[in-house]
Length: 305
Length: 285
Image (cartoon, rainbow over all chains, first blue to last red; front, side):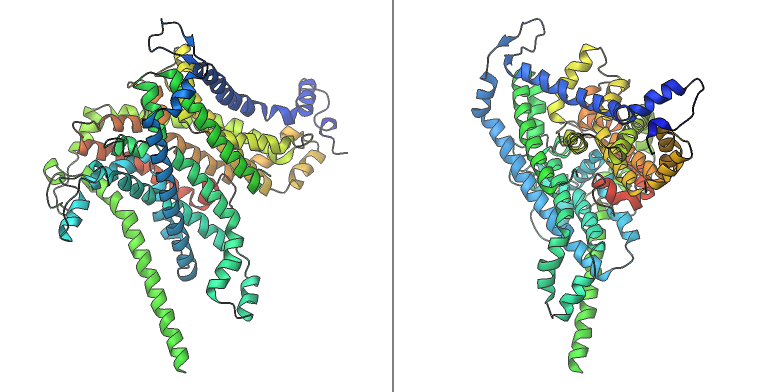
């Protein structure tokens, strides 16, 4: 009796159209989104598959030349790319680990001791909401070797001043620090939301049984928080792997490639060297690795159900 | 008795320690933004001063004048605004319908799950892998360096977010209200339009603001798709004043701070929806 096609205005000018619309509503409402997303994903993928097996000259008048897997072979023999991969992995693992530990630690502390959190949340959400370019600028000011605040702090502590983002050994650290500043609040807020939704009964039972705070944390809090932790981590990891804005402003990948990330390297190959075939080959590999990893993760965590 | 006193003492100390950690975290969070803001109001001589001038300086609007009147930052800001608003409207119209469909309708087999999953996985695609084809695509249609190209790209990137957010808000609504409207003679589409949509208004507003922020902040795609005042967005304009040889500190601080202010205000408005927005609707804060 709830058949949608049988209800609605009967008769009138719009009725034939209305009936058609009602019958196909579940397809019609999805169609625009699916078409746009298909355009976004299918066209690039097909384009890249064709470009990746060709030698594409920067000069559009030079015809393309089929070279099979030649561009993929270059991936294996490109030391600069290998450095970029290593940098991206190092950055992602250290930054996300720090953000996770700090965010979870702060959330546990605040959940226990500080009740009225709204004002605090308001301030903490600022770093991750403002434009990443503004974040990069802010830290560029702080790291500035001649008049930056960080070297002033070093001076006050009686330590030698540093080149920070301009120092081969410190540059990656400066990027990580800025990213940790920007994204720890993200983990913090998600963990706080997770902690707020914990049921109280198991804790009361544990208290009665005399379980230590440590045991309660590992046996109750961690398992309950697991879904939230999983979401927070996957979103952060996928984001960290595509790091671009911070390095583009702070170091442009330097000094000597110390902070060159995958995104920055592909950008360079495509738009500075105009080596489209090779850039397409690298992009395809990145696409399969990242989408494969996140798909596996989403399926495993049943996030799409 | 002593154990109770001891217990009380540890409690007080832990609490004090927690407040101390909180104060430190707040300081670390606020200081860099404070520093960007004050530097935008300083004369060059105070920006470059060693040791730094923390509070006492004669404030100036010189850099705001230089950036927004001298340099075309006002136009960049306007471009950013037009692009962000258009992107938000388009992705909200389509994404809300898709979100509703996925929240309410049955699809044969595992299609509902498969479609939801596929939509989310497109969001996981790093933008860098699409920039070359997008560049070629817009170049082919003569659309490089137009606001339209940026809007099309941003809409595609925001759609999965809007769809998932709205799906989660619609799933929170009881379907009985729409069913009642249909029993009273409304169509399915009518029930969506007149019942579900008004009820989801807070979620709609929050999603719109998140979408605005995403578009306003985006950098990489705009960097590739825009070159001149005709379409260039604020983040790209700012990055153009940070060159290898000279950095116009005052100007970019002014532009960077002014680009952040509306976002901070918007973020305050969606505070209650923040956790949900940050997790694609997966965590309901």
